[in-house]
Every structure is written in C-alpha cells, then in structure tokens.
Image (cartoon, rainbow, N blue to C red):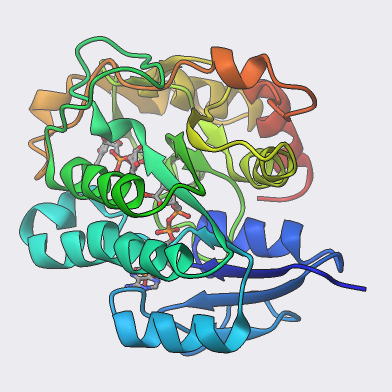
Length: 297
Ligand SMILES: NC(=O)C1=CN([C@@H]2O[C@H](COP(=O)(O)OP(=O)(O)OC[C@H]3O[C@@H](n4cnc5c(N)ncnc54)[C@H](OP(=O)(O)O)[C@@H]3O)[C@@H](O)[C@H]2O)C=CC1
Ligand SMILES: Cc1cn([C@H]2C[C@H](O)[C@@H](COP(=O)(O)OP(=O)(O)O[C@H]3O[C@@H](C)C(=O)[C@@H](O)[C@H]3O)O2)c(=O)[nH]c1=O
C-alpha cells in the first residue's frame, strides 16, 4: 500500500523533473505541480500550481494532503531577477512561506532547495554554518525563502546546492548544454575563469534527496558535486569528454562580461557533512559527463 503522499512543486524544472522521476517509482502517491498548464514528463499525476498564490497552495494541499512537500519551484534566471524584483521575491521568498505555513498546520515535512548564491563569493566553498551575505537579488530572495521556512516550520530540510546540470525537459539554465551546443556549432565562447563552484548532477541530487528524507534529517545541509573548479575548467572538461574543439573556449574575467547580476566568485559548497553520511550518491564529474555523452546528448 502506498502510505505517503508527496507533492512536488516546480515539477517541470530540471530538479523537479528528476524528483518526479525518482519519487514516481511506485512507492509513494506523488502529485507533480508547476506553474504551467501541462506536465513535461508524462505518466505521473499533475496539477498546475502557482506557489505564489496562497489560496491555491492551501486548496491543493488540503485536497491532496501531502506528508512531504519537495519545493523545487523557483525563479532561477539570476540576471532577470535584477529587473523582475517583485517576481523574484514572490516566487523565492513568499512561495516557500506559504508552503511552510500549510505544513505548520498539518503533519507535513518541507524539503526546500537553496543556493550558494546566499554568499558573497569571497571565501567559498561555504559550510552550512557560514554567514550569508548575498550580492544579487536572486541570492537575497532565496535567503528570504530560507528565513521564512526557518521562522515558520520546525519540520524542514533546506538543501543548498549549486550549478545544477543534467538532462531535463527544459534545461534552460544548463551551462553544460550551452558549452556542448556552442562547440558543436563551432562557435567561439568566452568562459569565466574566476567563478568557482562544485557542479551538481541533478540525477544524483534527486536520489540524494530520497536518502536524506529516509535519514529524517532536518535543518540546513549542503549538497554539491565532489569536484570544485572554475567555469573555464568545467567547460574544458566538457569539451575533452565530448571530443569537441577546446581551442574554441577562451577564458575571460567575470567583470568583462557585464552581466546584469553580480556573481559570487569563490562560491560553491563545502560538502564534508554530506560526505560523512552513508550511501549518498556523489559521482565524480568526469564519470557523469561520460555517462551523459554515452546516453546521447
Ligand atoms: N539551477 C541551478 O544551477 C541551481 C538551482 N538551485 C535551486 O534548486 C531548485 C531547482 O532549480 P532548477 O530545477 O534548476 O530550476 P528550474 O528553473 O529548472 O525549475 C523551476 C521550475 O519552477 C517553475 N516556477 C517558476 N515560478 C513558479 C511559481 N510561481 N509556481 C510554481 N512553479 C514555478 C519554473 O517555471 P518557468 O521555467 O516557467 O519559470 C520551472 O519549471 C531551485 O530552488 C533553485 O533555486 C540552487 C542552486 C543551483
Ligand atoms: C553569458 C556567459 C556566461 N558565462 C558564465 C558566467 C555566468 O555566471 C554563468 C551563467 O551560467 P548559469 O546560468 O549556469 O549561471 P548562474 O545563473 O550564475 O548560475 C547559478 O544558477 C542559480 C540558479 C544558482 O542558484 C547558482 O548556484 C548557480 O548555479 O556562465 C560565461 O562564462 N560566458 C558567457 O558568455
């Protein structure tokens, strides 16, 4: 008998898609949701849900009665957050608040996803106890989401991650896709060599969530990949594994790109805590890229 009702928000996004896949293995009743009218991965129950609409959140949750909510809905375009400030706070701060409010009134745990962009990038990789100091609107709005959850709900797990990549229905924020497609089209790209992170495979993270849920952990936990590097190094590794022309990748400093949002430079997450836990998948980056290539990308 399926005993647990699991609600997934942002189910059409990269992480939400993989959570839907991993949790949809028949063990639980899952309901995947997103702001869109239709689900992008077929075969699972789906309902549109805008997490910024408190009434809609409460109505759907009262009906479905989840005992676990996985909040993968977010406004993730870091540059657009600078101009769409109200939307950034609505989705990244108030959406999590409404979910936490419903959970606080019901026997329901909230697993929420956050980011290394909470930090200023002067001293990464950051541990779970490091002091946040966001330097862009996205980071500020995600910090707001964390604060709301901590204020309202005890039964929560906030998983901080960074530079998600993997195969998904949209992959709009995928750095790997951008590198592969540019090089395949013989396009020269300038890639920053002063932004450091630990790229995180969406498939591993989704599996890890299930494991961490089983371990009944609460509070804040970092989950990042085991390889810490700058974006230029990451792009070069992608080109090596995909047998593409590395000469097309030119290093550049972040300040020369004139991006709308400032980026933390020495970012990324210290993963010592997650490494000390049993059976949490943390596949090396090269192995992942080889697997992605072999399965067609
Ligand atoms: N991608 C990354 O590198 C990182 C992501 N994270 C965090 O991980 C989580 C998942 O990220 P990721 O899967 O990459 O994000 P995506 O942008 O791929 O997915 C987010 C999904 O949420 C949807 N959405 C947007 N607004 C709402 C809303 N109001 N109500 C319901 N759904 C909405 C988006 O729709 P639409 O596309 O139409 O906006 C999209 O389908 C987020 O919390 C993010 O902040 C943390 C660190 C790194
Ligand atoms: C346009 C451009 C960007 N870049 C680099 C700099 C820039 O920071 C980065 C943009 O790629 P991304 O979209 O992956 O990066 P960005 O939006 O900065 O990535 C972030 O996403 C959010 C959601 C997070 O939470 C963070 O952890 C992080 O993963 O790529 C280049 O190197 N060359 C270019 O020509």
